Length: 615
Image 1 (cartoon, rainbow, N blue to C red):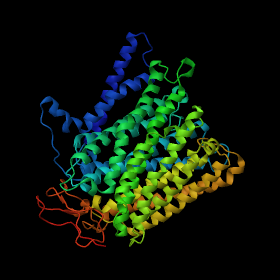
Image 2: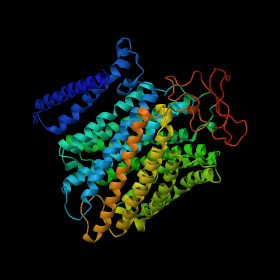
Image 3: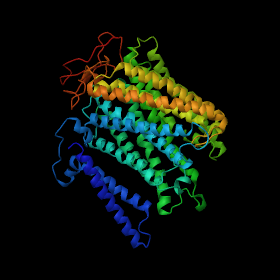
Image 4: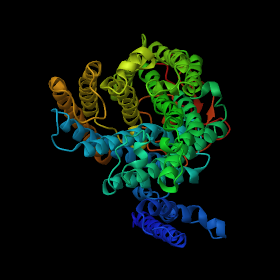
């Protein structure tokens, strides 16, 4: 049965939770404490429950059996049932990530629709302030998870080994483990509705996060688990790109999407543990009586903000660097031109990586940190516009005088550039101390953040989905519906979020379900635009589902692109390539006669050539 591993994982997970929770009850009884306190039982029971889930869903069969001298059970079927199993095929794992996070994206969008219904008029309409804060917090954390992992986990897992000529990821079983940590995260977040919710926003600032409902504990456990998955995934990508590139795939021939995944993985590997540490400290304050952030007992709430943003601002570039790489991967193929200023673009990526670690405190300008720190952090935040400018220069130089083919992936890539430009320009106001003092915690920040993440990362995600849909499924999507989806989404996105800058300038606070009556007409307009924006995804889902089921068969290389993934059948075979490909040229040398990126076929460099595309 296709779902047998998932059912077994649920049973083993429940048994593990009962075992851990029972042990916690016993220890509390021995210590003379009240036995049945929900938060300690949830916290202690969760970790053996998580282990039971992982072993039950497939880690025992594929991995742990050999620890005890038992034969590992190899995968026997290669049909649709693989997508519901603990498989080590990077292509299947990529689809698992992608479908999971698209569903979570739609769930977060549903929460956004509920928020906009509430905000259509001042005062309470359909929910209380507490419920609004919980819905707002759920929307925020799910969208952050989608932004962090959808491109890296989904499209990165599927495409990176193909792009570099590898058979799989460096650590296939760790790759599967990193995905199967995600379903418990989703379950924990949804379960917060049954545990009083959490109203601290996705940032979980103390002291509120230390005194609110038990749902906060579920939130903390979910985000810690998600962080562990991100660290494992980052380690795997770095090892794969460093060690498994095909012969001839030098650093100067690496596709730009691979460079972006490499840069983002470096940030994820080195910064994510700070977020986990901060949330663990909150758990210890709540459950063990410690005082990291309790000011009344000598703690420092501001310490949490430093720890949190030391991860969470670099995390913006975990979201955006793969989006840049994805857009810049698409632009040369649909412009029929080489990628402009390729070495400077790569330098720009790593300039962003370096500077991302020294800008975090611009989030604390209004939090009470010493005034003498304002200037340095304002300067470093402004400085990051230089490497970002190199990235934009590369994009503009690539499409300049190009033979543009405005297919759906190209439209979304161009939409990404337009939206992120607005997000970047409006970010300057938040980076400067004098303006940030007035705009902080207003809807100006909401507009800026959504232009950066949804207008940037999400548009790039859709560009990548449409671009690699033929390769993933072996079928073509409906181009007319794809273009309809783009224009519908692009126009309604801008009519939804541009007015928020105006609201912020007039002082409307974010994360609050009420506002002055004078702002009612603008909020009503935004809500109507948001409903139209949400409806655009009906077109997307319909197109994807129908095309995957009944779309026309896709050619191996429908875009006539040069990179390696397009030199194998669609969908790719289980082991990707019949023999290790031999890379002999640059992936974006359009317009050069007889230029070939790689030889694919027979080991040793002879065999079928990659597509020769001179534009």
